[in-house]
Length: 213
Image (cartoon, rainbow, N blue to C red; front, side):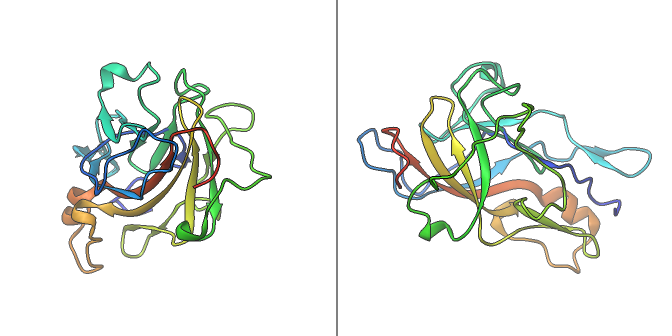
């Protein structure tokens, strides 16, 4: 592992962020795909004596229902659905929150996923069937390029999410760096550190409880 980044396994519990292309609807049809840009997720504030980068240790919480960032003060409520901290993602359920949330990683194309697969099992954070995915697992959402010290989302990986209120959403992480642009391999470690942990993702939320998108 290079000095530039400390990889932690994907843990699903989620939250946070910025701006979207469209707002969520309250009727019985799914929202159009919403894109969230530059969601800061425990950005790096220093290095340990061993050269391992660290942040404040706090998650950024996000409501997929309202398309809004939720404050840390509301972390113990059902106001948020998903949370981000570095490469770790949590969902509001199990040991991560009081909600009904759960999730899994679906392997397939976002645009072709029109419904939650019938044989799906939503895993709950820190439960016996935890939605904890080790770094490097072929079920994860990213790969770490150790040679170039970069985190790259894997195309065709969709996070299937049961929200805090028991509704459903599909979410695809598009980029892990500020501005939605991965630094070039030739960029310095300082640039790669300062620009990482800013999520760009898109999601579709079904407000009526249906598993169809």
